[in-house]
Figure (cartoon, one colour):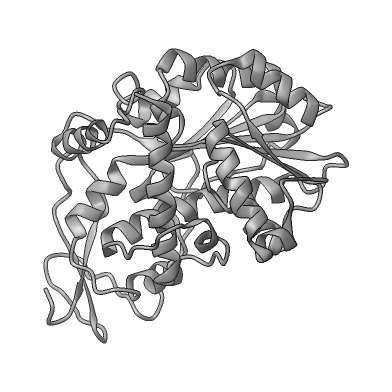
Length: 361
């Protein structure tokens, strides 16, 4: 697999993110500035990128909030940042006080992103390629000595709180290199968090097609066979990390505020419910805390709390006015929405419901 093929996943991803933003799933005025040619994606793709962006954004904001009382600079390091616009979005919303934000990727990606930043009046009003709270760096993540040299220049105190995140990046790296990087971070940054978003479950029908899809693009999923299930990903972080939060995207979506879920489900006519649940079952988000971070921020949670996911009792929440859960096999329409229980998909996803647009499905 060549660097160019892996970098191609960035080009596709940013177009999909821009499509989700244009349809109202997520608020990001900067993402369109990173897109050379726009394309409208299918509703299933828009939902998939919405939940991906929502999970990463929520975790970043939770880290910022949890460490806000620190009297020192905190760090966010994006590993394989691509054309991600999280820095610009957080900065424009005034959320990066006391944060130094570092983005790392291959040289060609960094050069192209720097060019796009410098060409955009809106982006340059937020940042230049390097400033007092931001740096865009070219480095190979599989070469720790080079990466370490870059980080030493940018982070004078490696004991400061730091969040490293990989959003569908390490999945394209050979497991021995990815694991070595994860372990190196836990050893060298004693007050750190590692945030990971990628694929799981390669062996069922959906998973086989998913893996074949990425292989056909020349960007094979290299870690998924070593860590095929969520339990394996938890075990992956059992050395060097003291707490691990992990959710598949069905669980994450259920954890969202019900009014927000209602808003999202009104944005587009949608009837691909089985595919949506299957897609969410095959992606996960994980946050691992070192002992040092947990000691200093023992109450911090980067992911939403759900019963059985993080060992905490689920908090009771009320359904919004637009929804009513009807137990058993009957259904009760409310306005133009009906919620109907259905069988779990093969592989097991409990507490699933089908949302119908009345008269359309």
